Figure 1 (tube, rainbow, N blue to C red):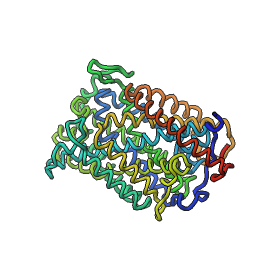
Figure 2: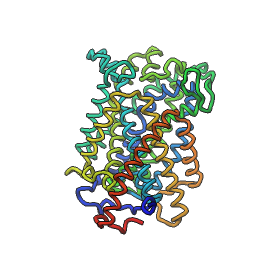
Figure 3: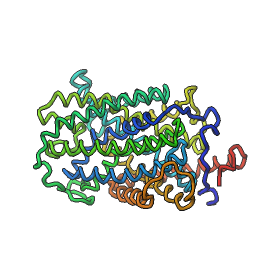
Figure 4: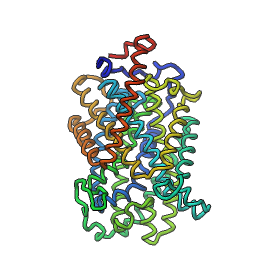
Length: 479
């Protein structure tokens, strides 16, 4: 019964796949760095800093440090694994090759949840900046600006932006990546303007008391979980995105060099950006004034008497936040594509267009995330997305550590420094953050994976086993 549960599968090169299931290699390291920064810098800093401040107060800065350190360790593990196995699929592919099929399925199933919910959360964050402008400029009814949780009917702006990005990705990978690079510049300029305007207004009194809700997660009298770690578990959402780079491995011209530059380079740049913005935001205004706001940075600028800069930031967010959508919708479609290509989801979903882009998966994903973004609030979406990401990050770090023991002399283009420490921080940190998530989120994540296990035994495992028995797949790639 357990014979095939932990069978591993060797990673194929792009050229070994059939033409209709082969992605086109069109990306270089500047595209990857822009993809990483575009995916990382977005809703997390533009919107979730308000959610984090509501949970940790001024100590939200410390929450950023903790989440950033754990993600940095995971990024180093990703860089090593991605250059060793330059294939689409990210953590799912690495787990299949190192830890076995069942674990790979759980990781892949969790990644589908992560990417789908991230796209939804970013779309809701984009809507938070777009809604005030649409109401004042176009008179769009309030009921069409938010879901039922906020007294509305449906969040139409969120659905609209998902459709636009999905259409762009369907045109081709290189074209969308080039546009993404230009929009990333707009986003960085907007954040630089915020820091330049807010930092001179820094008031030391806004940092007192620095940790009003304590360090560990605690339940308040109002039923809301607060504390530095409770905020870090949500703000963690702000840092991931570099993993989308690893999903582009097959579409990279020189993966051995470019993947490590893209993953590590984008992560280092984003940590520096986040710390500047977080200090400027907390120092410029009392945290209670922007806690849980859907547009905290623009709100801070208005409170500083700079409405023109606030409008500039909001417009920049509207223009540039779709880069995050692009990065994660790109990653989600590649995860889904790879699982389908392996036969554990319908193989028809793994066909590419004449341009080498997985259009079917992209449109299918867009339809799902549009429903989520149109109806659910951002904090619940982000928390559940974090649960899937934490599992994936821990799995990648574990794969790196296992391979360092199992195959210490295997060629490694990029080697994570102090691998045992880096891997340990990533695994332990992700576990701690997972248990710092709201209990309801942990329950939903468990339900999602129980559903995934049922699908695995009912469809995925029999499908792969049947293909092996009929020799319609190469049995030599399995162990």
